[in-house]
Length: 639
Image 1 (cartoon, rainbow, N blue to C red):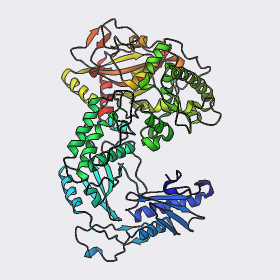
Image 2: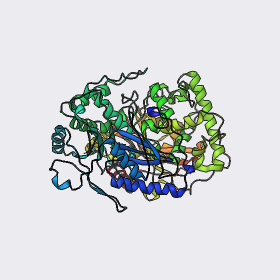
Image 3: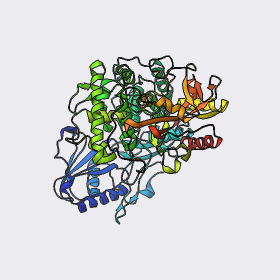
Image 4: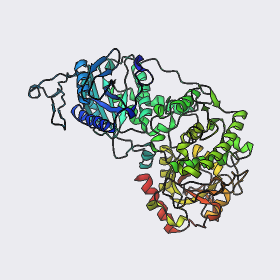
């Protein structure tokens, strides 16, 4: 925010290279000490020649003029300006003093009443910071904390700064969020979700002109809060709900050419109305956030409007042009850490291989795989006008881009291996400036959870080291499947499809495509999702169709490479999913081929990749193999 000219300030750019490693280490040590001395200070960190910190919702930046310890300028909200010197702790102390919120009261602890709040911290450098005397905040806070405890929600008052009280609520993760969903969304299932905010009397008066910023985290060190994958989306949800709660003018929903699902509009409105039945600020906010947690995947990460495409497991950005632009222009600064915080280069390369294969399909097939709802809208750096968008011309351009991506990938892996993904955006690495945004879209648009299985988790009888966890069912679908499983039992089967189709399946889910334009292999045994107990039967559905990518000469043998660093040759892939299917009455069995017309009765569990000539015959009728798959599934789903 500082580099974008917030508050009209244009400080000189940070230059970490200008500081010696010794000085930078000294600053880091001083930050740790200051964090211990001043627990009221949040998000204290250094960025080159700037030190950033926050009191409640007020952000401050100290810009070093010269050597560390000499004079610096502290800039804050409104007209706050300060010139001071000394260590990080000295800078923070001087800022507190000017704010008028650091009132030293030696010996005041024994005179304070029980309801008064104070913080007493000892620094690890031998210095002692006196207790902070805290003025009592709005009485509604005490009442709300008592009400929250009745709902098993713990709430602490952390500090009072400039007339505002900072509180933190510990919200338990709802039971609908399974271990695997929590992992896919970046949550720790065993740890509560902390929601921290600063509130004052204006908030309790429901003053719509008063901002309410909520910070979410799960883990906290002495220096900073760990980045939370869903943090930005949750903050956007909280802001939206505060506008509704306070009666502030609603932000008009962004227009889209596609129909918005009425079910999701009504669902969100019902959660708002139910949560607003509670008085105060903390209780309705806690109730609303708790209700919204299991359905993060149903609403846009940026605008919080319902997704126009059917939701899968991973949260996503909607197809509205402004959201697409924001995602491409600002990336994780807008969306949070949902994607880049856990980029697995091997998975990213596998997704790129699928997209490259999709780009080789005949025109009509490619039009289905990249229909308008799932088409990349790409922007050149610095431009607000799409350089790639849906339409006949856009599809032709996309085919050219995917062909160029294949060529650039083959060239770069010869020198960089899996690191080609990190070098493709370097100057001169590729000829087309849209390739880096396309590659980013390939990663961002994947809405299924795909994770490499470690060697100890792999099942040797599956005959390939390329084994992955593949989950696409959102919480409500997984819950419905578990009910079917409990009633009818379940078994594991293979599902095979071309690599190009998997690009589509990971974004739309495994569908009953019989009788639709997406059907690619006929329906000899009737409509439904086709499954097999025999790997070779499913592999026959994975054969190349259309123009295959040109085989890479001397493609590196990655079979012995460490997990997460392996590559795949798009010209030589067979991809199979292992699905768990509930034995519902509609399931029909035709020797090795099973057909299930009920999409709710089939969920993906694992993903296998083979070379075309190396697919072994594996029979999933084996009780031992079924038990291994069941145990591994339980471990991945339930933890």
